[in-house]
Amino acid sequence: MCAVLTVLGIQAAALAALERAAKSWPEPLQALIVIAAPLSLLISPTFVRWAPTSMLDVPIAFFLLTTALLIARAVEAPERSDAALSRLVICAGFFAGLKPTFFIFLPLIAIFVARIAFLRYGSRAATYALTALLIVSAPWYVRAFVEAGDPISPYLNLKFHGVDPKFSVVDW
Image 1 (cartoon, helix red, strand yellow):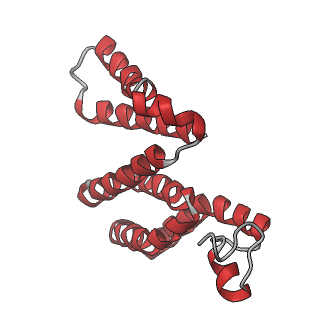
Image 2: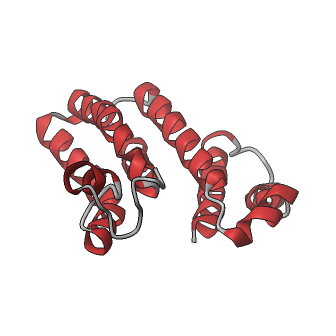
């Protein structure tokens, strides 16, 4: 699943880059870039070796880098750039939900999102953007809470209860 989303993310990034910078390029070349960018990941030896075993490092690195680039793009985007803020919220929310330990990034991402939205649109838009960020990142934490009784399993269970349904203190 993460591999598919990473490939789709790379394709979306290629489309966005072409939309912005390559309007003068011939259409066949643009189509080739949109196909070749995700294909270059799919046929890379590292991806081929580790994708079947669910190695998450490639999508994690991709979404971390994409989130950082989208923050930079949203900061320098022209006033009232809805697309830049929307892309940032969706990508950052997905990144924050990839692993339970990434909840640590949520306050930092939330500061950037709130600041950008507040300066461009006002407090209501900042509230909506933060709510969207939490909604996008929430499914993974809700799933962990339902399965283990702990949204960032096993940390809270081990800290407050001393036991976790999946892991023991020795594992950590």
